[in-house]
Length: 301
Image (cartoon, rainbow, N blue to C red; front, side, top):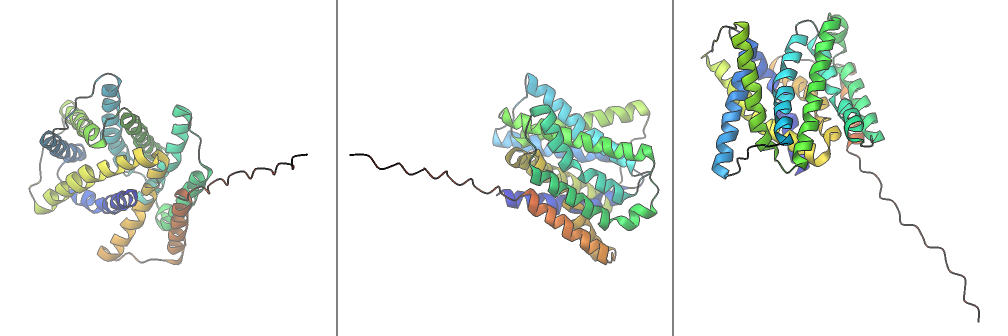
C-alpha cells in the first residue's frame, strides 16, 4: 500500500507542472492558488460529511491545523512563485527537493529523532543527480540572492507543514480531515491578501484554464496531498519527502513526450544518481542477529 501511495504521489505531482503552466495568464497567481485549494477544500468537506468523518480540530490541534494551512497551502506556493521570477526553474526544483534533508534535520531539532545515515546519503545523491539533470538550465540561468531565499523559504514552509501533519496524525486526526481545514485556511488567507492588495478578481473560462484548475484541485490537491501526508505519517517525513526528488524526473519525461526534451549523457547520469538515492533512502536496515549464547561448562560430578 505504501509503495502504491508513493508511486501515486510521484506520478501526480510530477505532472502538475503542465497544469500550473496552463494557468499562467489573465488570472492573478494568488487567485489561481485560492481557486485551486478552495475547490479542493469543498470536495474534501463534502467527502467527510458523506462519510460522517467531519471533525472540528480543538485545542492544540486547532493551532497546528492553522499553521499547516499557512505553511503548506499558502506560503510555500507564494514563495516558489516569487522565486521562479528570478531563479531558473531547474534550480528551484533542486532547492525544493532538499526537503528530504530539511525534514530529517527539523525532525532532529524539534522531536529529537535520530537521523538515519542512509536517508542523508540518499538525499545527497538525489540532489547531486538533479543538479546534473538541470545543469544546462542552472548554469545558463540568472539567480538572485532574493530568489534563492524565496525558494529556500518555500522549502522550509513545506517541511514545516510535513512535521505538523505528522504531529496531527499522532493526535488521531487523518490527513483528509486536516487537509480540508488547512486548505480552507490557505484559501482564506490568499483571498484576504487579494482584497487588501487590491488584486482584481478574475476568472478564465477557457477549457485549458478550467481543465488545469480541475486537475490541480482534484488529483493534485485532494488525492496528491492526502496520499503524500499519509506517507508522512507512515514512513516519516524524511522518507516521504524523497518523492520531491522524483517529481522533476517525471516532469522531464513528460516534457520529452510533449515538448521534445532530449535526454543527454549528463542527464542520464543524473537520473542514475536519483534512483540510487531512492534505493538508499528506502533500504531496510539489516536485522540484528540474535546473540549466540555461550556454551555452559559441563557440570562437575
